[in-house]
Length: 235
Image (cartoon, rainbow, N blue to C red; front, side):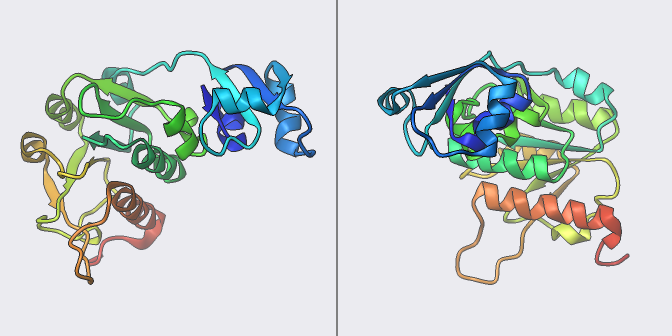
């Protein structure tokens, strides 16, 4: 079950909504008009929505078909230029925010380990404002072995690390790349060791790091900047 007008609409656009519940008496909204064209609508008392969804549901909730995850082999066969790999992102809000940034930055696929990761629930879809529904998500049993497979496919793999050797603008992201973002404890040692480089985001204040979603957004937009013609700091 997911809730919130944007999240439900994006899921409907992606073809994953089975049924939409809309509270009685809502003010006109173009999003609701589009939803009515895309999915089956049940108009119900607002109390029913309250019982289905927790949080700011905006009078809209939806039942989803099961999420289908792709394979890493299939992703690599599509000749990706940018992959995001997530290591230990266990907070649903963080995961949703990262997926929203990934979609905005044009990431070709997101690799998520089966363990030590938040499941892609309605809360994640809501936090991503529905962007998760448009991304190619891949589940892997082990992230370290997945990184090795990505490297064999010809992508450079870089890990975000507070002790990294390079700033993001010192790495050439104009080449195909996989970026690994870790949770509160950072990227795990074995995964970090499999990567080609470790990048740090310089911090001018007293706190030594950003949270995972902010760090992911920062580095993804450095990729976007370089690929738009900005180049590296030495280019």
